[in-house]
Image 1 (cartoon, rainbow, N blue to C red):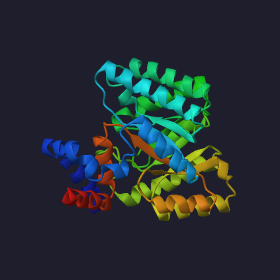
Image 2: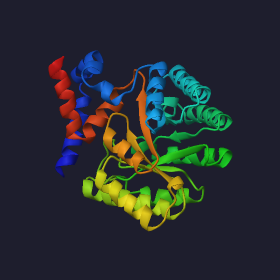
Image 3: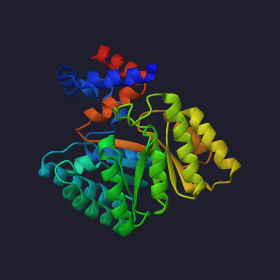
Image 4: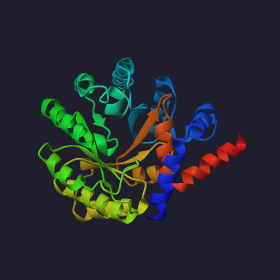
Length: 309
């Protein structure tokens, strides 16, 4: 197994240990979490959105939380997302919203998350905004796509989109499946711990499939959110869109809050649209550990914070 895969699996395994969880939940915001999580409150994150907008960066807000088992918590998350949409509209911010179905109760009953998503996307349409259904681990891929298909038929691709993960073997077929809806798709590499039976273990293979997915969706004339911090991939994509004269309003680059900030601004200066995935909330631990698992440099940053504690 490649070294990068070993590192990711080791970090994700360590993050599941109760002692590690306890330490980070107690000291995390002083140990580097604030680099990756914009705020714990809606009020705090909206201030960050204004700052990012002022730099020419668009935003997608993510209210952190997943794998909800209590219907009351799913209701609470849905209400928070509705409030986000209202505030974005009232404050005239350049932002839309990303959601996770497991946060909205799909693990309790798919009907629960469907009910919430219908309400949320209807609100997005009312406010002339957009909802992105995040993709979680591979056990939820099919149900996520099925719900997306239901929602896009009802509300249109202008108001709801989804995500495909390049490390999954099935993603090329899923992209073809989504073409009939002219779907707005975010392409990511994938950050969950997956078995070799369903996902490429090698970074080289993931990168190759990533670029192929981006090119295929662009060639189809569909809106593509290119979510990566990999400068080599970004340069391949910018060369491709220029060579093939793909309009700049057909795609955007997406990056995570707190990562590659100079690269974000450089792309804006070159005239590309850049959207920052900006998470907030108190349920930050699973998101945070995936960010650490993605890059050794992120772990070094956190260890420095630990030593300063």
